[in-house]
Length: 70
Image (cartoon, rainbow, N blue to C red; front, side, top):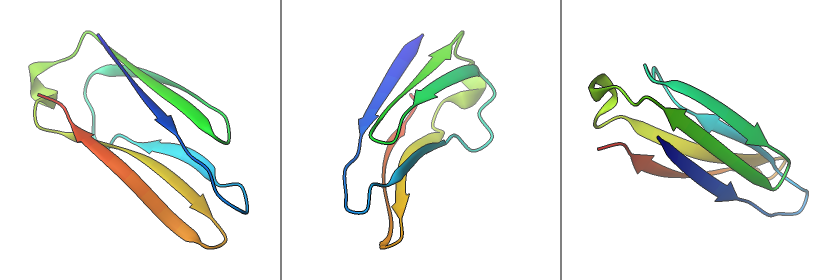
């Protein structure tokens, strides 16, 4: 299992969401406007190399940060 955390900020306050693509492994997220965590359990080898992104979006635009599962 792995937990990925993300914190965002901005004005106006952004909305945070996770882009997990076509992730096979079971996952659950908990997000508020500025904090988020994504827990992935029983990780499948089919997900190796897949990209997971934390995305923040407001009226000004969008920004993201990503990790690759290995």
